[in-house]
Length: 289
Ligand SMILES: C[C@](O)(CO)[C@H](O)COP(=O)(O)OP(=O)(O)OC[C@H]1O[C@@H](n2ccc(N)nc2=O)[C@H](O)[C@@H]1O
Ligand SMILES: Nc1ncnc2c1ncn2[C@@H]1O[C@H](COP(=O)(O)OP(=O)(O)OP(=O)(O)O)[C@@H](O)[C@H]1O
Image 1 (cartoon, rainbow, N blue to C red):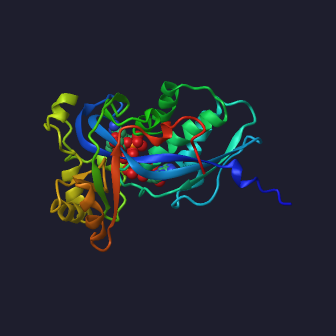
Image 2 (cartoon, rainbow, N blue to C red):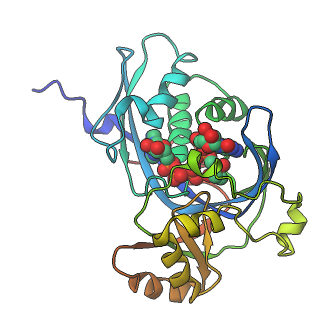
Image 3 (cartoon, helix red, strand yellow):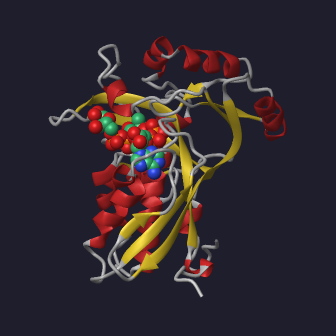
């Protein structure tokens, strides 16, 4: 007899990654944060967050998570934030199966945080609605609310003003050039275009908005990303996601695996499908280990 909590006490919750199908910066808020317009495309690929409830009030991460210090881990910070709304004495063990590269512009950490908020809101029976969870998420990062809302979306503000959008089902090849890009430093780049004219959802749908404002900056500063864009650019219209480093291209489904398989040394490639609704929004009880 050991004091281990039984395996079945764990539940597993999906944390999908995202792509930014375009990204314009239209201005800055008085607090320095940038106003942007983007389309978030959720993917059927991402991390998995495993959670089990504790009754001693402790929040602990189990295992390593890609070298991230436990106190800084967005899953731990999300749990601590939500704990104020939980019945006294409840805590959690949290374990992350990390697949999404860190600093990849694919929103991995943000999605882990959103998933933790949803999972513990349910397991702790906090009773917060989606809007309250999204507001908590925004305290953790600009990309968290879209994952809390769980729908591909046209976004404005710092990424928190979201209009759900139905995107055509596409298959993407995503390439990690093997470098990690710090989001904050990229937003500070002097050469960043910060005065793009505002577009609309219709503008995006008609093909008028396709650029990522960070792409020229990242291309010039990170040769590995430039190489990935050039390689993928021979297969279709290659784009940077977020502040990078990951780049992607939409391709015919049957070609995707072959393209990913020919990814140059030093880079990693994945195939993922765009989805409109996050698997996180599956009905209660559908979360499986
Ligand atoms: C580039 C995107 O990934 C697009 O989806 C997001 O805008 C970035 O979102 P994120 O990774 O959640 O970034 P955060 O953790 O919120 O912000 C990191 C840092 O980037 C800068 N930042 C972020 C978002 C924003 N709209 N303006 C900014 O200037 C701030 O210096 C901030 O301290
Ligand atoms: N669970 C987590 N997963 C990934 N990164 C985390 C996590 N917790 C904290 N972080 C920190 O967040 C930063 C980057 O997070 P993330 O990988 O989500 O960024 P990103 O890929 O650039 O995505 P985004 O598009 O949201 O900017 C790193 O500094 C990392 O140490």
